[in-house]
Amino acid sequence: MKFFAQILALTFIFTLASSVIIHAETVEMDKEVPDFTLKDVMDKTHSLKDLSTDKKATVVMFISTECPVSNAYNERIIALHNDYKDRDVEFIGINSNRTETVEEIAEHNKASKFQFLVLKDLKNEIANNFGARRTPEIYLLDEKRNLRYHGAIDNSQDNPETHYLREVLDLVVAGKPVPENLKKTKAFGCTIKRVRKQRSQSRTP
Image 1: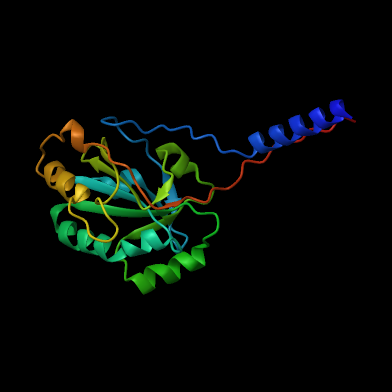
Image 2: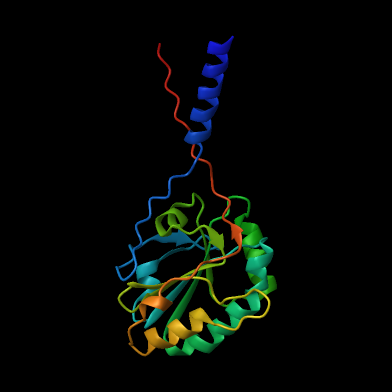
């Protein structure tokens, strides 16, 4: 009986491990972010390269339709977009939650009055490449698509005193270097609900 209990325990562990997503991050600080393509809610394909061409900065935002933390930042995101869109800054929203459909994203965009693109990351591939785990979570790229900042929008959902993204945006738009202590902060919010990795099964005849 003990032997069979051990077998069952090992089987459970193997099954659990096979469903865990491995985050193969390809985005590094101060290095060029690899190009990617995703579709918007109108089924139109967009690439990072095309969207960021001739821009002084590009803000990649992992956001959600359902996460209360992400939604608490909607007005601040809109204000950021309005303040920087005429300063050659591109804003790109990415939804990587498997639980949130394209239809829900379209309705959420309209209700939230977003004036920037929100793309759907159906298989979490872009979230995995970036290593994104929360909503909202921010990645700021410079004119050469080098990563200059990763983390939170500011330091508090309710009463922020330090506006990280604004500080770094001002530096990047002005062509100034970002100090090491400003390059990374801890993103907070809801976890991204990823698609589970299925274990391949092979059958012998």
